[in-house]
Image 1: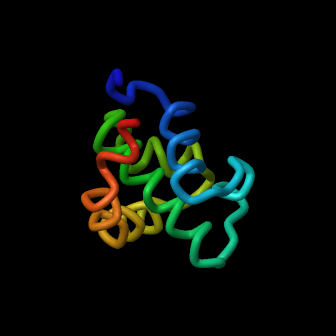
Image 2: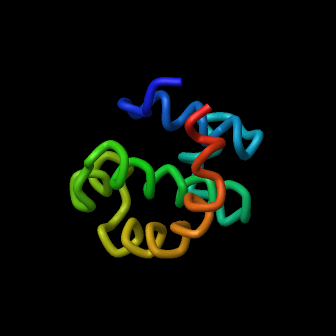
Image 3: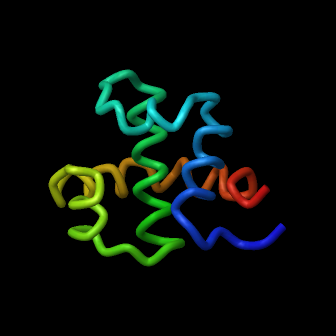
Amino acid sequence: MPPIHDRKTVEDRVCKLFSIGTEDIYSKSKEKVKARALGLLCYRAVTALGYGLMEWARQLGLTQPVIGYALSREEHIANQNHHKLQK
């Protein structure tokens, strides 16, 4: 399977992993599964796609501290599920 190179691919894989729709990721819901999906999406966008924290925060309409917190909180999920995102 080719590596992840674009935002849409990351979104699709995160949605599949959490069994949610794309709109659920961006709903800003406090629901645990949606918040974790957003966190994982942020983590992958910064680490795999090379987005900067400020750039990614602007695209999502969030603040840099929110993205930073999501990155640190969700790093363990990314490490545990790395192989699932590659499929």
